[in-house]
Image (cartoon, rainbow, N blue to C red; front, side):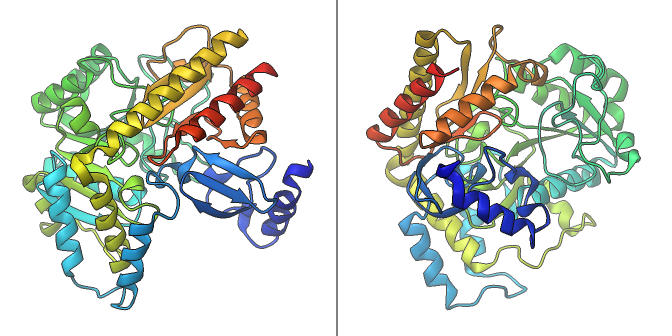
Length: 432
């Protein structure tokens, strides 16, 4: 354990003053403990033991431009002397909302907040206000924040999850009220027939369908051809608000998010993570008819929404992402595809059932004999101990990946970073 000696000591110290030793349950990473990170620059992190990592965790998504991007930090520094929270509106908010409206297909009006959980709540409240209905359809394995009313069936155990075509609504946390079942319907992803049958019974009660257009939290599962189009058709047919949760995909899989990449426009979409390079900023954007609900009784508040430093970070981030015709996305796609192909070749050479799936900017590595993954249950059926052993082997060799096997590809990788990553993966696979 010499490699992680200081991290282990730091975590033990943290547990004496921080509940659980971390400030989010999604930071528990028991290999061997949450690392004590000292600094980050570009695609790299350094821990308190002096180990350097090529970082594919990327703060769970925000560090798309790498850690500490200079133009973003410069913009934030310039904003600090102007004040932070004015309890009104400032020019930066207007400018950033205008930029989002130009970039995002569904965005006629925009509202800012601080986190993905918060904007998911706003979107669902607006949908209920707009339709006068209460039920929400979500998909098994998809994550839309940790609030009581939607934190369900994100990672259910299959022995409790019910039939695949009629999943149970399972609270994801102790302390959640039992009545969350009353207003939620859980469905399998990528199955139009099941959803059609469900909406034939419950469409008139359903306010919204909320979906990760790419299921990034359970194997980075893309929609099968025609699936998002079917969601759009069914929502139109039943008068349901279609919400894309683009907290992860937004500004990552394309400048205009998954709705641009796949050519399907939702009624409302939510964004966070990559839009402000790690500063606390999130947005909900959608049609005027729905978004104007905030002035008609669908209440939304928040002290820190649109503070100047986060807005400055958002503007600078979008400037960097859209520069030179947004060619940065071509680079990320090339880098990610090279990594995916290289990892698959390593697995084949080492004779292990490594399956690589996703898009250039975000993909997943799992171990399965029955690829590809189409829904959560496919992901859940993969070999989790093998995946975790692979991730441990990568980390021991200076490559950091999320415990669930998701790789957030930073836009600032060098060819040498990719070569080192593939060498580390080959060595780690050789030990399995």
